[in-house]
Image (cartoon, rainbow, N blue to C red; front, side):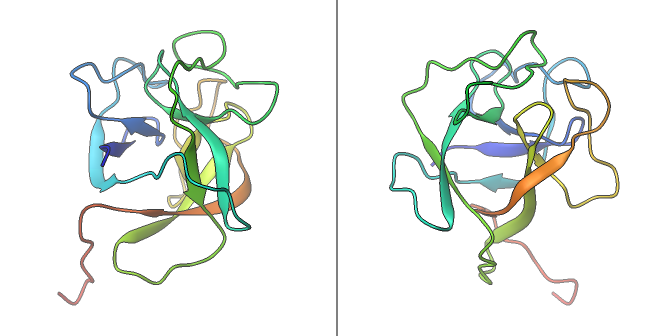
Length: 150
């Protein structure tokens, strides 16, 4: 399992398994908050599982690498990857399991994955807030969420 986390400054998904926390569009390194996510890699793409998501070795975020453009990286230029992992993200099929979180979206402006569950949209490295487009990703967590009633 890999420790993917939500950054509470820029709202993106970033890899939290290294001592350095990458480059955050809101300044300095990413700051982890909340759940830990398990993003499956190197599995078959389906009608509800999109492949071509990669780790950016410059900013430590995940970005969509399935188009000619690699978006805008907060470390400058476009996102870059050396990873052999092809992450596959589940979408538009609300899994009602206690260990998932929906409202993760592709940003049309930076090609990153960000949390779209708040009125604010975080800080996009292309300037301003993130802009949601495409699928509503439903991601498995490795930590348990609790109801308000628990």
